[in-house]
Length: 214
Image (tube, rainbow, N blue to C red; front, side, top):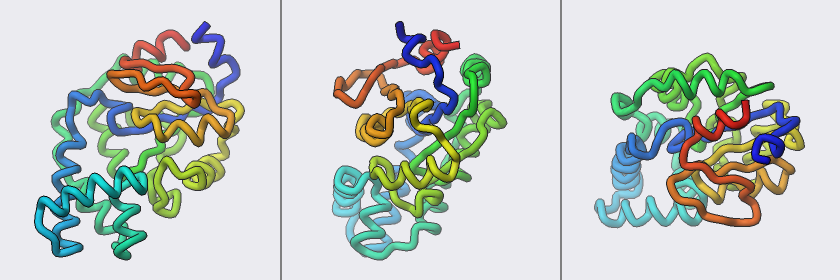
């Protein structure tokens, strides 16, 4: 029944962080430290306040960057360069996942709230580079973040994605609401399910889930 639900899908869109690599890699721990440091410098606030703002902006605006831009006029380009300057050695190449993504019928894309250069570094470390027809970062959505509907519209239009024949894989359930409204199949990729009307499927094993579909 799961495979039948994806009959006709020809555009496969994958989030990056904690989706194309397991949360156990804890890559985002490094990014969060760098985000907090950037907020400290940009707003001239102590670490505790910077950490609070980082979390608050993520919850309220979709990303810390969106809050910094909207409320403080922070330039996104140096921010993205700084927060993604991390160590990728925790990532392990996954040839099985690569083969299963490659076997999916149609086009494959990465769409992340991070930057496209950062996504390319992650994909290279995971052995997933060269598999995707397009890699889209927040810069391709005019720095508007998922879960904003207009961010998805901007990226999907640029990629020429037919949402009626699309599937979206995401670790953040908020970011599946707009794809669902646009007619896509939605898959929540996370250790723990969070049932919601806009989530069609859940898996804690992306590679195993894709094996069912090919």
